[in-house]
Length: 517
Image 1 (cartoon, helix red, strand yellow):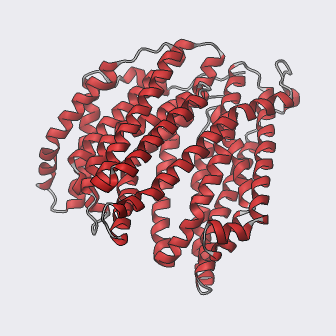
Image 2 (tube, rainbow, N blue to C red):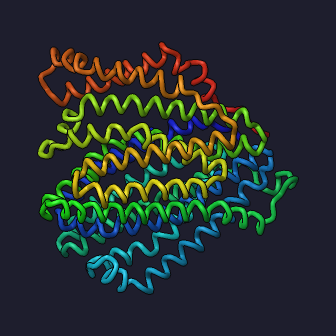
Image 3 (cartoon, rainbow, N blue to C red):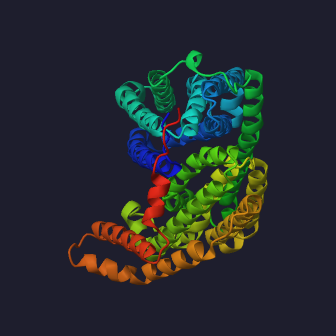
């Protein structure tokens, strides 16, 4: 069974995630034009419920399976790989059916009292059979992450988007004529069928790529199913609780922002505009590069678990250190980009709204935001979910405090300062836990000093780069795109020259490991 390195897996997931985000961006533009602002508002009532349930239900199972599969694969106990996957399927399906049943029997309460709009009833009805399907797919994704073959999950994500968009395109005319309730149901149906398509493709690949039956494998080291289920629950439960608590606190945080803006003297319309600029325009741009670190975090879990199971602490430290170093490189590069071109980048995508000031302030969060994702993957791989939850709660409390006390006096800028302080503190706490647990040495020179120096150089030459491309094109859009791309290239070249990026080390990280018999 061949395995890819965690870096090559992260690259595959990153490319697939980029394609998925492009599909999603086009889809949301089409959907918003199709059903209008009120229809999108109705659909947005369903989306947070959907996300909260799915993230809570699936994140823990996926991580648990990927860890256990990686550990058993490292020990060459191949017979346990599919036993773990089947047990996880049973657990996730059971949990999905339980939640679906709860929503089905209390559907009127959810639509009228929780979502405060009876028109969401039909969408919730469509969502009910979708939940167990998504839960089941998390087990299969965990299996592929564990054996470090991420291509099937990458392809299934793209296939899901294609099916979702196709369903909406085919049903748009029929559903739109019946009103917004049916239009929202149509969007939810597309989402549900996309998830079903995702699972169907994963199951097909899982069966197709089955090279040997468990009957032909050695039964040495076989795990009892009772023990497997106990281990999955032990690992998955704290991860799911972590995701649930942080999601709830984040929801409370975002709900509180417009209310505190009102307390600061803005009228309702102005406060919602500021809130929309921050959460719907500026923050998605800042977090777009985190597509790289989120992919890295997913592949780090099995990579670290595998090395720990073989007691290869030197390999663990090397993988963690290089992942953190790569995250700092990414963070410093995009901090420089958003500091240098905030108005130009904001103007390309949001011509009517001025988000440049927000992008400039949020640029200081890039390093911490990206590092948090990488360290979360490291802590999950090390079975430190409780520490991660504690630190995340500390960060959320700090941000909520800034929302409550700083926004009325200083507006959105006060909240951004809170994001910088909280995310920085959480990174320090997580990094301290990793260093104390593994004995890893913090490399200030290659993590902070050298990348920081390159970032400063990039910032000071950025205007000259922009002016240079202005000679060849009068289009602000093309000029900005070329200047940003050139700055990124310059940054990577400088990182290589001063030794932060090493070609031989990157080859070593990318190179796949030999087949296991």
